[in-house]
Image (spheres, rainbow, N blue to C red):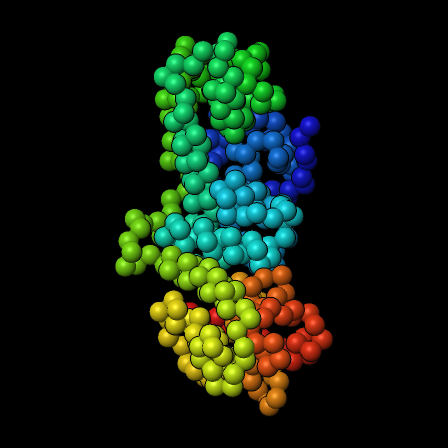
Length: 345
């Protein structure tokens, strides 16, 4: 059963013409244009792609079907591991930051048009990789594993409508015939990976161009930022249990700013020593993401304590009572003293 999601169609000028051309070659297109206020998702990824591209820009705080589709695709690519709830929260933002870093584009945690396009390309690349396991010619009678892969590709493009079961039955044959007719694949004569790769490659070429896309280069790729974030958290966690020591800057004893300075130094990043200087050095943000710094007003006016945010309203800090530990931002003590979050750019 297809899941129906209400969707108000926007200005036609906003719809990417290349994706429309691809959509026109599927048998679903005539149905979609006959019901312009409806898009069916969770059935054909090619339609989900269209909805996601039309969203143009997604960011922290958004809650929509487009966000859920983005989460679903990031999960397939092994960047997102939570429930696909359509809420653009910290975990979604962090997953996207990791994706952006590994694909050589500016790390913002926001899904702009370039990032969305690269997510779709990465999804298609994964399908190309899976097709490498197909033999030169598939025996439809005995090779259920290969038929399963073929059904998956045809399902992606909206040609196959049945259960992906590895059986070369009437629905699969119909899907093959439709794909052949619309793309000239000759798949019916020879079930193999090359025609399917041709279909996927063509789909990649018809996606919008990515202006910021460039070959990865160690000297200019910002991947260090996200790797640094992951390593910051790992280093911080490894120091849990270290004692508190006023003025301390080593695992033998930390104060709050000495702890933060130490974990950044481990990533070869230099930051100021005191809480006030770190506050002035870092960039204000509305909501903390994993790896950001959060500040508190404790024993004096202004910022006097800080920790590193690790998600789910938790942070790691060097506290006076227990040394380096995980604390809960929702606790009354911390909530009442919270000043805000900042980021080391």
